[in-house]
Length: 261
Image (cartoon, rainbow, N blue to C red; front, side, top):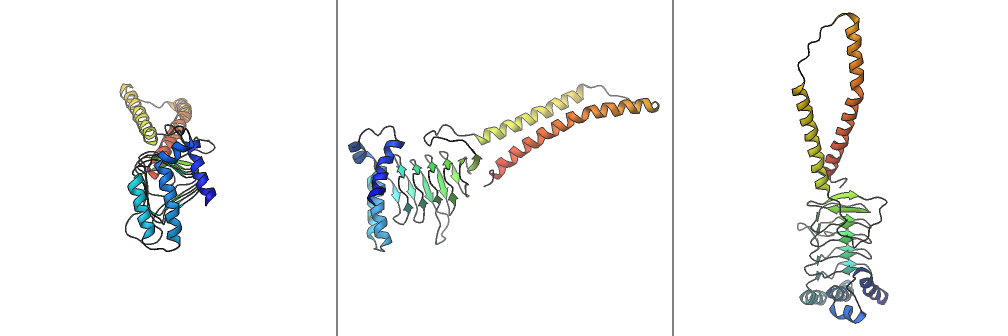
């Protein structure tokens, strides 16, 4: 337990550039206060002591603005930055070294019993105002963009943005957990793809409108050979256009399907 408390304390200096000295952190960081009070309440909760764990949780909420149910399981090195308005439900599980910002909700849906809150892996970053709802799992090194609403499982090493949350894979890219501005805009990408498709169709319509009507008179085999040559020449252009359309359709389908979630 002592090692866990020390890890909670030390991680603040790694995650918050405003942390200047130990005394300031001990006295002025509500996220640390709420987390330490929760760890004490969680021990009493596991010992099945009635009422008192909830009273401690309620007192911590009054002092810090952070509501953590004593039944929640929170790993070591978790940092709740600022933390006002954070809500963590009873059956939530948070892995080691998670970073949670203000206004985050790890909540349930409906009135089902049993496991009904999210499970977060290690090194997960949940941006300000994000909502993760239901009995779902976020893999390791997942980043949730600010204001996102996550309703389905998320694989490891992914970034989730939007409402509802959609995954964007970032395989092989190491991202600093504090770089919250470095988030992809999947909606803008799909809108750009649709605009490009519309512009291409408009160009095709203009080309067809400007071309004069052609009257073809077949004269022996020579005309057929010329027609065959012209048709063969248009095949690569048609294939290239078809491939571009397939790529655009794939991007749109991935956006609508949430890229796998």
